[in-house]
Amino acid sequence: MLRTNQKEKQERICSNPKCNELGVFPAPKSRDQLREYLYFCINCIREFNKSWNYFDGLNEQELEVEIRKSVTWDRPSWKFGTKNINYDFEKAFNTFENNKSIRDKKILNKKLDNALRVLGLSHEASIKEVKTRYKFLAKKWHPDVQNENQSKINKDKFIDITNAYKVILESLTKPAKN
Image (cartoon, rainbow, N blue to C red; front, side, top):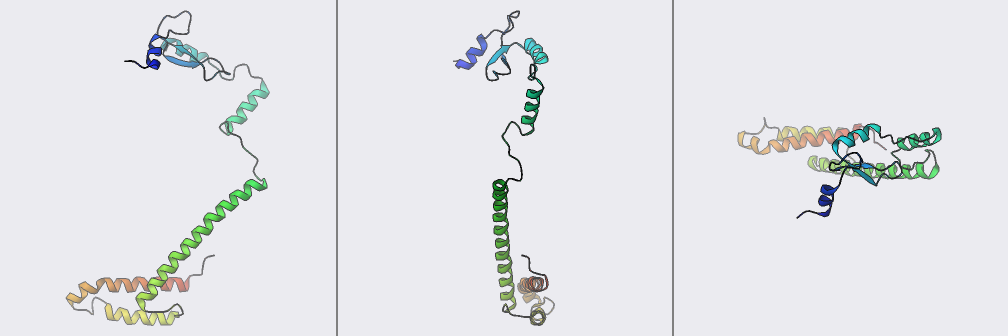
């Protein structure tokens, strides 16, 4: 059972009056009727394509309009610098930037809080206090100080202490980003 489109394609004869072959290949009727088609056989469609010129019959101004339209893919556009458009773009990008900076601050604060908790320090701790606390914990939990069984178990503890120390030092020494 054939669909009507398939049946229609099989019964169509080439639009070239000098040809009696099956017309399978669509071609627009004219520049103004791009959605209405003539159907050609393979040889006639090749000839049609060689002779087809979309811009045929346009004067200089009409051709210039077509060229301008093709620059923006035939979509409407507006001049840059108009207040409303720039304001909307600026507002949108500022929203993204604000959300990003808030998210980054939350992540940094969370990392810093975890690092301070690992070392057992408060937010008011100075660099000297951080270094002193790190040296004490590093000596206590270093794998070389532990016996073999404890070394395997407490290896991660030493790594956590070292990573926490790096995070705290970085937050205390680097200038805050706005």
